[in-house]
Image 1 (cartoon, rainbow, N blue to C red):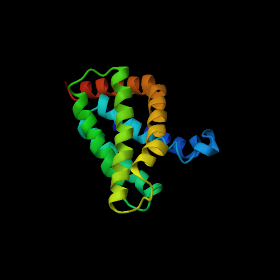
Image 2: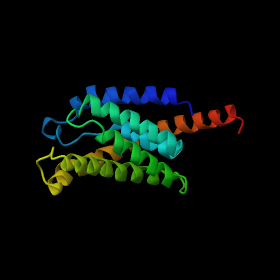
Image 3: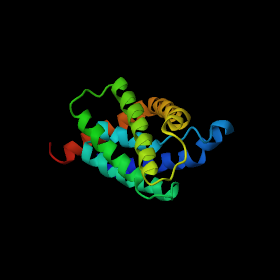
Length: 174
């Protein structure tokens, strides 16, 4: 897989997430809906690439998100995205990669990502809300919008990644 183009596409999605999506989300929901487009791409890399690439992909973009947006604690998103990318890639090696599996992976991964980050922030006493409130206010709406965005990105990203995996396999002689 030619990761350079995938990384560039994910950087463009990150720019879209930070510049256009805030204008599309209604003002009352702006602190509730926080889709993580780089994480969605990490899940796609895990499903259609391999777990090692997804680990480094999630680590890089997670640390980038930590530095750009969440400066209180560096590494929470990097660790969580890398771990979930690796685990989803490990699970994907044993399952067929269908649309429903992809959407469940993105939805479950998004919920686990936000729960892990909440847990890390709670461990260091950086949050002042209960877990139940975080699930209701932030995690479930983000899960739903992430699944919707994954559905919109499914066909083009799958074609892109499958084509690049096939061309990579031919270049490597196998």
